[in-house]
Image (cartoon, rainbow, N blue to C red; front, side, top):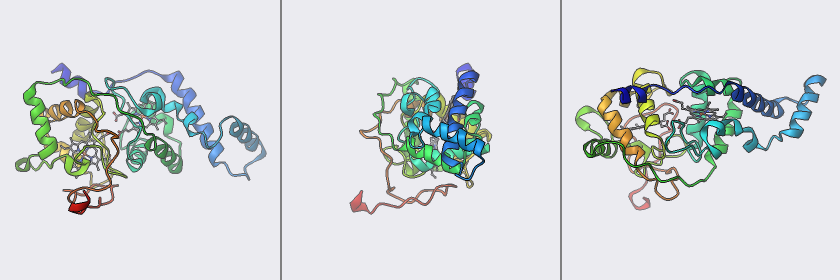
Length: 270
Ligand code: HEC
Ligand code: HEC
């Protein structure tokens, strides 16, 4: 029970000094990028000196703020709570940054860093992390009894039609590596993070654009289903490359806001 509660609670980290500094670094980058040449002289001086130390093109130095929590190069750690962001579909990452900035998701220590950044800047950061091609570490050993893992596997691969739960792979792809540009993969994520996200969708703490297909699906899952699915997913290795797919074998079982209809692969091209 405490385990279950703990996994639904979001960890709170105290990094005020570090995040304040990093927020400054980020906004300096944003200024260097967005202040027009016609700005007042005082601003131009500040901008010029910032631009000299933080070149506009140097996205990797600006996103050091992010790697403080998301791990070196956005790769995260397999046993922590922080999600990996490297190599995820760009449209998905951009949607999430907009969600955090605009309050559809909440993690104050991170929201604070991006609250004043423009849509364009957030999309650029999303593109930066999406383009990183880094290997995934092997998954941790399964942390649930065999029966729970089997329940998780079935839900992910087949769903449960009687309870109107579609197979997760019907949208997240057969290899569960997601589908470009807006559907994330489900592998390489910590079990606590998965539990927390599904729990947050059930309670309305995490929202996506309407129609919020994941909220509908999460509400169909019992707490047992959620821990089974999270335990199974967190223990699966990522197939070589781990790249998001481009097509799905069949049409998505539901519409999802902020996600364009994914093309269906012709049988021969699969
Ligand atoms: C203080 C720690 C911290 C910092 C700094 C931080 N993040 Fe996060 N980030 C998190 C946590 C924790 C989550 C998951 C929050 C949740 O929904 O429970 C998250 C979630 C995300 C997600 C969503 C991932 C997914 O799979 O849905 C993205 C994208 C992201 N962060 C990008 C960034 C970027 C870009 C920066 C730098 C501007 C950044 N983060 C800085 C802690 C941090
Ligand atoms: C109808 C399509 C669809 C189905 C079926 C589906 N998902 Fe999703 N899922 C999505 C979309 C779209 C997103 C991205 C939502 C957003 O933009 O926030 C998502 C996001 C997620 C995330 C967040 C990942 C992250 O990095 O934060 C998790 C976890 C997840 N889904 C789990 C599941 C599980 C488990 C199932 C099966 C029980 C499932 N999904 C079935 C479309 C689907």
